[in-house]
Length: 436
Image (tube, rainbow, N blue to C red; front, side, top):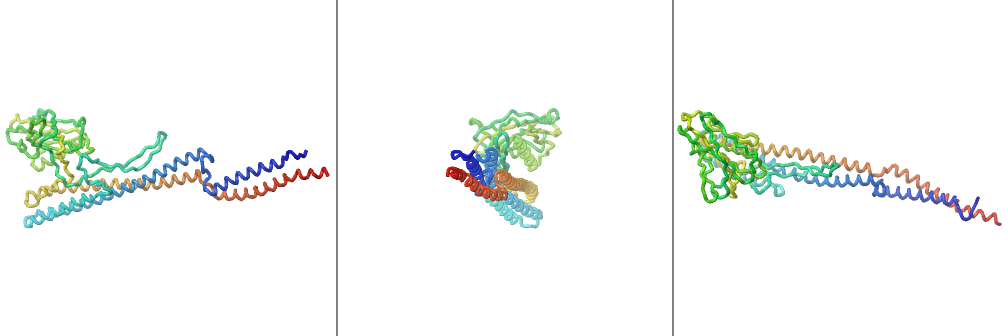
C-alpha cells in the first residue's frame, strides 16, 4: 500500500544515513585526534585505565629528574673521595721517605702540611647544589639523604621508594669533649678483678637513647699495685665533667665517642671500641691486659692480665656528656697528628696514614656503589616509562590503517545513503499520476 502520509522507504533511508553520518563523525574524530578512546564516553573503563597510566608516566618523568640530580651529587662526592685517597697516598709516600734518617724531615713535613690543606680544600668544595656528602660532623644536619627512585602502585595506593645515600665524613675537624657544663650522666662502676675471679664487664647499650652531639665514654679507673703498663695516669681520658656545679673527676684510661646524626647504639659501641684500640696502640697498652670490644650494641671490657698483687682491680664505668660544646671529630682528624720531624713520630705516622687511607677508600667505594645503583635505577625508569607509553598507546590509539579504510567505505555508504533517500522521497510524486 502506498501512502502520501507515511513514507517507510524514506524513513529507512533516513535512519541509515544518520547512522552512516554518526560513524563518519566518529571516524573523523579518530583521524583528527589519533585516538580510538579520546574521552570517557568512548570507553569509560579503558579511558580510566589510560589516565592512571598517564599520571604514572608524568610521575616517572619527575623521578628521572630526581635520579639525575642524585647521580650528579653522588658523582661529585665519589670523585672527591678518590682525589682525597690519591692525596693521602702521596702523604704516605712522604712518610715513607721520612723513614730515612739522612733526609730533611722539616721540608717533608712542609709538603705533608700542604697536602693536608689541599685535602681540606677538596672536601670543602665537594658540593653539588649546596649539598656536601663528605661533611658529616654537624649534629644539626642529616647524616644521609634520600633520592626519590620509584613510585610503587598497589591495590592499597601509591608509595614512594628512595635510595638512601649515607654521608661519609672526610673532614679534618678535631673532636672535643666538653670538660665543663652540660649534663654528665654515669652508670655505676663495674669491677674487674684481674686475678681471674671476674675477668670481664659487659655493658648493653641497646637501651641507650643515642643523641647526636652527645659524648659517650667508657672509663677505666685502675687500682694497680705493681705499676703495670696501664695506670690511672694514662692519657686519653675525660678529665672533668660538671653537673650542678660539682666537678666529678674520671682520671683513667678512657675511650670516647661523640655521636653523629643517625647513629645507633651499635654505632656508639663500635666507636668506643675503635677509640680504645687507637688509644691502646698509641700508649703501648697490651690489649691482653685490658681490652674493649663491641658486638651488636654490647660493649665488653676484659682483662687477661696476671698481676703479682691479686688485689689489683679495674673499675669500668659507662658515661655520657650532653653539651653544646662537644665537637664531633672528622673522619680524617688524625691528619693533624701526622708529624715526621722525629723517628718516633714517623713510625706512628705510618700507622695513622694507613687508617686514613682506608677511611677514604671506604668512602669512595660507598659512593661508587650508590652511584651504580642510581644509574641502574635511572635506566630502569627510562625503560619503564617507554613501556607505559607503549601500553597507553595500545589502549587508546586509533589504528590509522583501519580507520583510513573505514573512512573510504563510509564515504561510499554516505553517497549511497543520500541517493537512497532521494529515491525514497520521490515515491509520493508517483502517486500524482493515479489522479490525472
